[in-house]
Length: 215
Image (cartoon, rainbow, N blue to C red; front, top):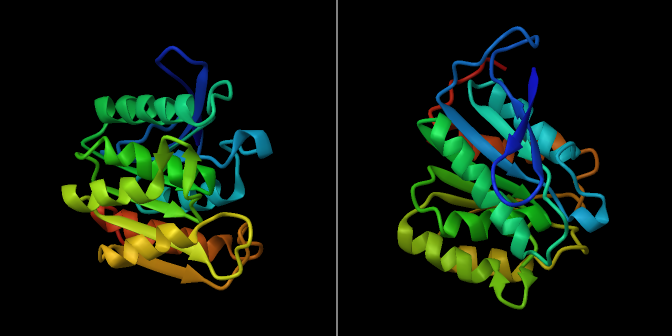
């Protein structure tokens, strides 16, 4: 079951809240943990219904963790988009005991940058992250802040990715001793969204108190 949510703030940001353990709109989740999911580049048709975001959400909700997938407001060169993520995290923090963050591609960089300014997050994972949002905002600097704060962080990359500039992010994550996982796939994880969800969700779930599921 998904509920439409309007995220408070100065921008028009809408989200879908996927509730754990509910099969219909009449059911309500009693989850006390939530992961906020940042979509890929909005100017390249990135949106909250992205296949990778949905796969991660399904993995998490199967394990008792809600997932908030949001759309960015009007394009703002990466500046407004990080504000959108901050506001989505604030919305989740008011309602849940434990909050994590995840993003794909452009959203992966958004997630890392946003997590760097929210040290109380339980964990953050970036799937095929872009290295930079704009001249002032980059994922490598964010990784340094996350390592200093001790925030559990995982970077997942595709070995055949020729779309995102992920190499500097992965290199720095390894230098800092952060978790790095790789998948034999292209940038869009064609046919591999389940593996991507496991690499991301398998890292986030235990850190947010997710329950094990019999496979």
